[in-house]
Image 1 (cartoon, rainbow, N blue to C red):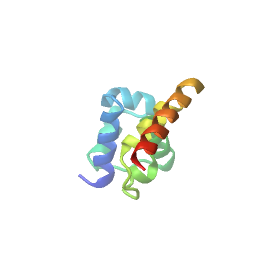
Image 2 (image 1 turned 90 degrees about the vertical axis):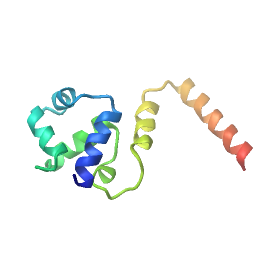
Image 3 (image 1 turned 60 degrees about the vertical axis):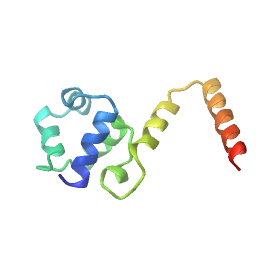
Image 4 (image 1 turned 45 degrees about the vertical axis):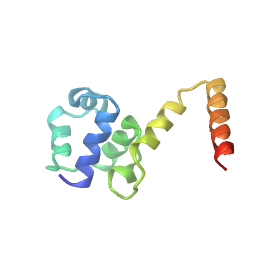
Length: 102
């Protein structure tokens, strides 16, 4: 398993999607997604971008060009769905933690 296929499967699982669910969201067949995850095929650039968007990761991370874990993208994906009040509350907590630490 190469870096891309490993990270692809890992990102799908972290997103809480089964292969069949992910393939429907990506508008590709389940067998195509399976081939990507087993390193038999590579997606075209449009599909790669859709994968990154749906899984909440960067294309650079998927391709092994970024060491950042998918947790960063997962947090971002949650962040964009938060209300302004929730975002402010989260920022307050982060600022508090950083103030205590430094």
